Image (cartoon, rainbow, N blue to C red; front, side):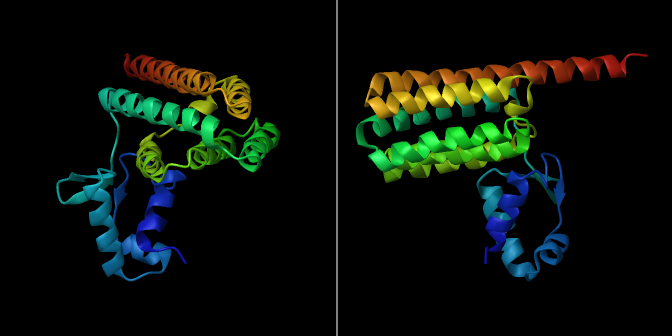
Length: 215
């Protein structure tokens, strides 16, 4: 059974609690069927990790501003690129086959952005593991945990799912060939395109809000 921390983190990750939502200790305890003490400890831990922030006396799910988003993608790009480079050097044949199979399977859910988002995290985690560097995996876990604070997946953008899977295939091909430079380049291109897509979606959302606010 998951502990209170994992349960709350999963709820943030799957969108049950979104950026700006208020988390109430008693409500969380009731929802997850646990006592309030572990919930309180979990909330304190999540606040320390900047997953939650204070609004007066209340704790709310944190929101990433533009600069924080850019900083997160900068770190993610460097760490993911290193993981791809190391995977090209150290991945076993079995790990490469699993990565290739994940891409094939993900085409079946290409029209479901939320399912594809979960599959995307699984794919990237497999690359992290294939790097065979435990310290790198730990740091990437932190980065991907913070990414749960993004309210909307970039894979929801029109046409992004198909392009993303094509980019995944390019990464797998480079890892399979043992070409560390190509694997790093393919991964960097993938993250850069995802970030650009997210920025465009944010700009559209902002413009739509301005239009709604006009008298």
